[in-house]
Length: 521
Figure 1 (cartoon, rainbow, N blue to C red):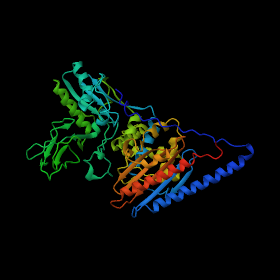
Figure 2 (figure 1 turned 60 degrees about the vertical axis):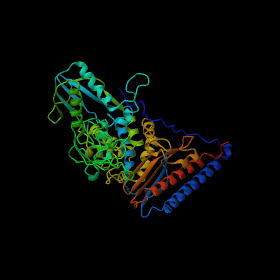
Figure 3 (figure 1 turned 90 degrees about the horizontal axis):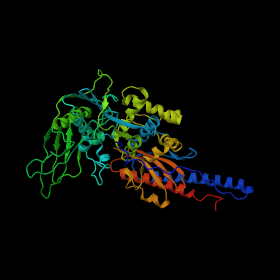
Figure 4 (figure 1 turned 60 degrees about the horizontal axis):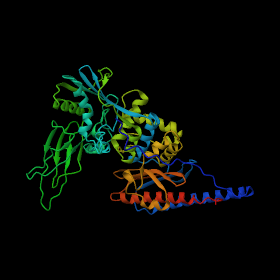
């Protein structure tokens, strides 16, 4: 059952070169010299304008790095601290997704399977971050019937539960979740320890489910405590402690948060619930493979099956084998990198970097082998020791503050995919489109006046705001840009974003000026 119907990336306009129509042959030298003069003047102009934008940005003592690169020639048109190292925040996802495409190829699909081996059931994880992703499920019909409702998480689970029940297997000796494609280090050491309950810090495992988070929908009860019984997926065995009030007076408001200890699944509810929540309150799960094994056992027992035990595979288990039961859940790589880049899903990036490590070493994917392999791929694609020296990789998403990259490396990386006929369309198509999709849906209205398309990746962590991507003209000329801002004082993020948008607007203006070609009609 493929999960690619709704999120297959749009295919961007492929770059072409339209030669200018020349005048008489005898004027060729004059035209060439004139074009060179105009080109040099234009490049000087964009460099000066970008420096002015940076100088007048009012971002306090923040450090700004900029690179603008021609995607046809690889020439850097403008650079400002372009070779310095910066914390990239989520711009790191550009490196991770590009490296994953380089290793796995554009036709790769994840395959997560339920296997039957005699009286045992085995879930064979493939490191797919999209497995049970509720936002993707909402884009899919629950059946082939006309006007079928969207799939929800329980309908998704029944894709496996129903075939097991129909097979007549009973009792089930054990359920085993094999997540050994990845190691069992669930979070990097460099992630903020006080934020591990937040959805953007979801644990990373070889079997991901429901973004590795629980969703709660709290509501007032008319009593002292709020009600947290509505949750997705339903899991009655979880330990919960409720300190959240249910005050509904005129001065009250809803402000719920959920705490979880780093090494367990006891959830503690705090705050107040004035009105019923329509959007979920998320909290990360610990050890999702074990949780999913328990979930399958619970759902099968509710259908009259006896389950002896459930567990996660260990190092002593033989390779998982058996006959597939029900659907093989398949997700195309294009869907995964689009969700990663356009929607900035950290979990997706971390699953990708571990999958890179597994694919190239044959070992369980880890941050150690994944990060090392990403550096190796960057070296392969760019063949520049100087640029590689500016790269430090400690995770896939950019949440770690130990990552480092230069603006020049990022624009050269983007140039390499523009030039890549096999991977370019998938990579570029995975980026958010300014004013239309993803994290850029509400940004860059001022670029439209030039008729350009902006596809880019934004990034933010405390004190850091970054933007890297492409500006493409109607006649398919494309420039890559990277604007990295570090050491932002409190309260200046909005000004950093305006700085980025002014620079991108100036890049669009530069590209628009190229539309008037000397010697054409």
